[in-house]
Length: 142
Image (cartoon, rainbow, N blue to C red; front, side):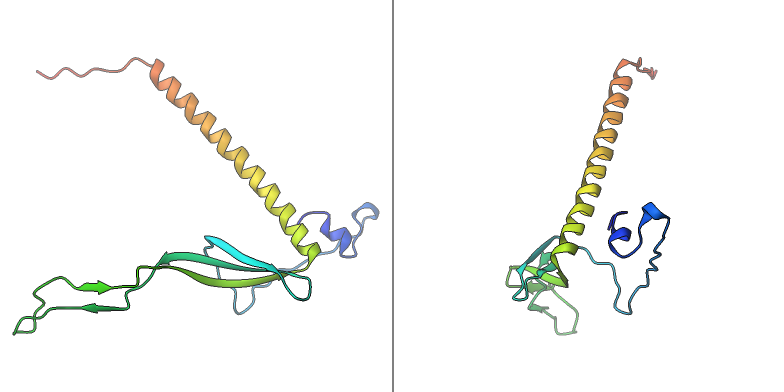
C-alpha cells in the first residue's frame, strides 16, 4: 500500500534489506466499476465491504405487436419494475491494519487527484483569460 509496508513485512530499508513482492493476477481477476459500497464490521472483527454498480432494471418482459404477415406494426414495448438495481460486483474483507493501509493509500491518491484537478483548472483559467486578451479576427464576407 505504501513504502513503509515493506519494513512491516520483514524487510528493513534502514539496514539495506529489500523485500520484493511479485504481483500475480488470480484466475478470477477482473476490472470492475464501483458506484458505491456497502458493508460493516464482520462477526470476526474484520471490515467487510461489498462494491456495487448501479443501473436501471432490465425489462421483465416486452411486447411486440405483429401484423398478419408477421411484421412488427408498433415499436417494442418494454415492461420493467422501474427500480434501480445495485449489482454487487465483489466482496472484500480487510483486517484493521489492511483497512488503515487502504485508507492511507486512498487519501494519498485523493490528494494527488485534487492537486491535478486544481492545476488543470488553473491552466484552463489562464487559457480562457489569454483568449479574451487576444484580438479576435473578423472575417468580412462580401
